[in-house]
Image 1 (cartoon, rainbow, N blue to C red):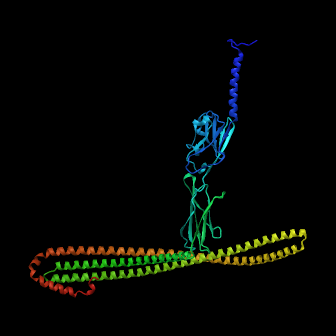
Image 2 (image 1 turned 45 degrees about the horizontal axis):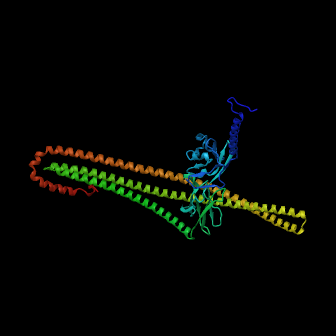
Image 3 (image 1 turned 90 degrees about the horizontal axis):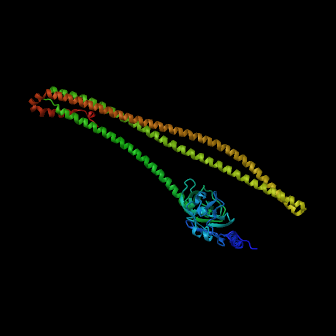
Length: 549
C-alpha cells in the first residue's frame, strides 16, 4: 500500500528531494571542514618603505566572505593587525601602528584568498604574523623579515685635540640600525678602549644613528678600530684608522704653538690697554692747554678794547694784569699739583697691577703643584691595587695546587705528589714574598698618602689665601680708579665754573667802562698809537711764569 500526502502526490518523491538537499549540505560542510589554511613556508623579505603582501588562502578554495578573518601579531598588545567579520573591517580592534596601512582583497574572498597587504613597512613591522579563521579552527603563520645591508659602515673622523693629554679625539658614526646597536673602540691588539657613552638618534622608519667619541694617545701601532654591532646577533661592521708615527708629535707641537699665540695675544691686549691709557691722559693735557690759550687770547683782546688815552687807565690796566697774573700763577700751581697727584696715582695703579699679575701667576703655580700631588696620589693607589691583584692571583694558584695535591694523594703517586708539594712550597714562598711586599708597600703608600693629603691641604689653603688676596687687590684697584676718575671730573667742573664766572665779570666791567669813556676815547684818537706802543712794552715786561703753558 503506497502512502499519499494531502495533495495526492506520493510521499516518496518528497523524501527523495529532501535527501538530496541534506546530502548537498553535508557535502558542503564536509568540504569546508577539510579545507586547510596555507601560508608561506619561506619568510617574506621586505625593504624599508615597500608595500608587501602576506599570503594566506584556503585549499581547497571555499568562500570566506561571510567568515571571521583575523590577522594578528602574537608578540604585540593588542595583537590584532586586521580583523574582518562578514565582509566588514573591525577598525576599533586594530593596533595603533597598523591603522591605515592594512587591507584585504575583498573580491578574492569568495575564492578563499584571505591574503593581507601591508603598506609602507618599517622595522617595527618585522615578526611572525598569524592568519586565523575561528569558525573553521584553521590557522597559518607568515614570517616577515628585512633585507640585510641597510646600515652604513661606520665613518671615523678626527674631531679635535685634547690639550691636557696631548692626544686626539676620534669620532665614529653609523646610520641605519635596528634595534639600537652598541659601539666599541679597539686598539691594534684588539683591546677595548675607554670611551664615553654613545649618542643615539632615532630617525625615519624606526632606524637608529649612533655616534661615539674617544680620546687616544700615541701607541706602538697607532691603529684604532670602531666596531658597531648588535647585542644578540652576529651582525657587525667596523672601520679602522691609522696615524703615522710623527702625527702625535705634530699635534703636541701645534698645541704649544696655540698656547704661545694665546700668551702673545694676551700681552698685546695688555700693551694696547696701557697705550690707550697714556693717549687718553695726553689728550686731557692738550685740552687743558688749549683752554688756557683761549683764556689768554680773550684776556689780551679785552686789554686791547679797554685801552685808555690817559695814564689813569694805564695804571688800572696794569693792576688788572697783575691780578690776572697772580690768578694764573695760582691756577698753574694747582694744575701742577693735580698732575703730580695723578702721576702718583698712576704709579700706584701700575704697581697694584704688577702685584696682581704676580699673585695670579703664583696662584696658577700652586694649582699646578696641587694637581701634581693629586696625580702622584692616584699613581700610588694604582700600584697598591696592582699588588693586591697579584696577591689574589697567587692565592688562587696556591688553592689550585692544593686541590691538585689532594687529588694526587688519593692515588698515592709519589713522584707527582712530590712535584705538587714542590710547586706548593714555591707558591707559598711567592705568596709570603708578595704579602711582605704588599705590607711594606701598604705602609709606604699609607705614609705617602698621608703626606700627600697634608701637602694637598696646605696647598689648597695657600691657593685659597692667594685667591682672597687677589680679590682684595682687584677691589682696591677698582676703588682707586674710581677715586681718580671722580677727582678728575671734579677738577674739570671747578675749572669750567671758575673760567666762566671770570669771563662774565670781565665782560660786564668792560661794557660799563666803555660806555662811560666813549666820549674821551673819541677825543684821544690821536694818542691811541702811543698807548698801543706802551701797552706792547708793558706786555713784554710781564714775567714768563704768568704765561700759560
